[in-house]
Image (cartoon, rainbow, N blue to C red; front, side, top):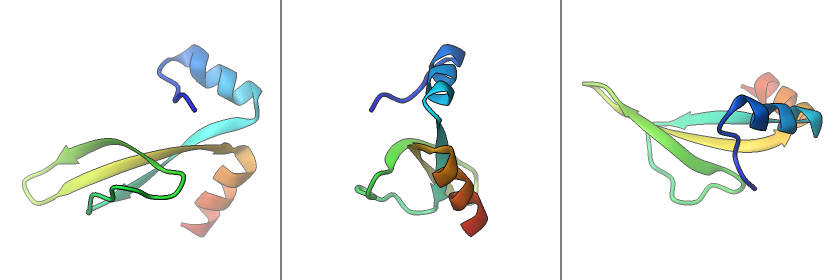
Length: 67
């Protein structure tokens, strides 16, 4: 699945009833079912690894409720 990179891509996802969710971790995980490593950021104190996943709106809502 190709991740969106511009507004048009996000609009196309929206039209399909989908969106992108993000997850952060202090540990790099080589394989997390359904998740793709996207980026990382470093501060003086820690490094945060960011993962993303394309899901339906319903899945995104459930993900937010569970957090």
